[in-house]
Image 1 (cartoon, rainbow, N blue to C red):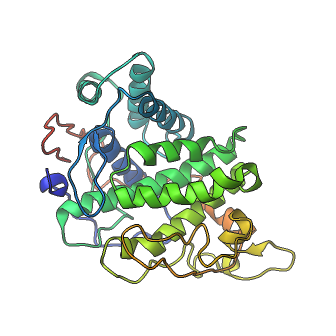
Image 2: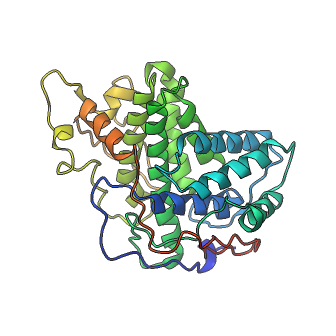
Amino acid sequence: ITEKYCGNSVPESPACCAPSGQVFTVDIENGLAFIFNNTLIYNNWEPQGETTRWLVDYTESTVRKNLIGFLGILNKYLKAPDHIHDHTKTFIQNVTEYVLGQESFTAPQLQNIFIELQSNGGDGYLSAWQPSVSCHNIKEDKCYANEWIASCGFWNMFHTMTVSAAKDNATDHLEVLEAIKGFMHNFFFCWECRHHFLGMYEQTIDTYGDNTVNTTDKAILWLWCTHNTVNQVWPLEEGNYWPPHPRFPPPGACPDCWTESPGAEYTNCSALFCQGNQGPYDCFEAQSVLHKPPFPRTYHNFSMPHVLQYLKGVYSGPYSILNPQPIDKKLNITANIKCPQLQ
């Protein structure tokens, strides 16, 4: 197909906006619904604006390995009921049990398991796609709305897992980031976004290793730096030439994050993760995939201890359980390969 998700039905979001720095379970579960109904089955969007896709190839061992790694961090670091509902957690556990018990499987076979679990999984199921609370679509195009709301849910999910790993005193400080990297490489639906994320990963963690991310706290800050950079790059990649998104957290939400404090580590992402690279464009202000010239350097110094404290406060949970629709309404996972719907 050449149209994105061909007219999926997306419920309208509530008129109110979520308070800054507040995370809602419904938005993470919308992201999970999109993952299990779309990205783990149909993926690999073509570059240069093409939207043709194909089935994920699980005959490749690397793809299966990356799926297992991603399911692993979902199981370990998305907590129920603090982050997601118990029935969502059980569904993820059931999927993981199936995947680990198979020597090989195809995307249609995996999708059939998702459908069977939704019908016969007992206490484990995914709730139907809900109106977003904090992830608002910024375009009129309803097809695009699914991607936008899902991406917002992904970021909330990723930040949650880096913070959760730190709270659990995880011994592998790169466990979550490596699993996210595998997800981006094989399953993320936006080719340009994938290219940019993997480029930042290569130019920081893959290049400098433990010299750049050597603790779970540093993993939290690395993902935060990456997210802020994506928010600067995304408008141009989309061809919209909109103003970049404000850096997070905004000064009003965390004044101390933006203020140099005596004795505090007040620095920028390049100095923190790129070995102070002072080239014309650093590893976080990466070159645009589709547009030339590269993005301009847009450094800003933050009080990193205050940023870390703020992120841990926001993404620890328990999250607000605000569901616009009943959670016992199950997601309709469709086997229609040509045009999957979110219902």
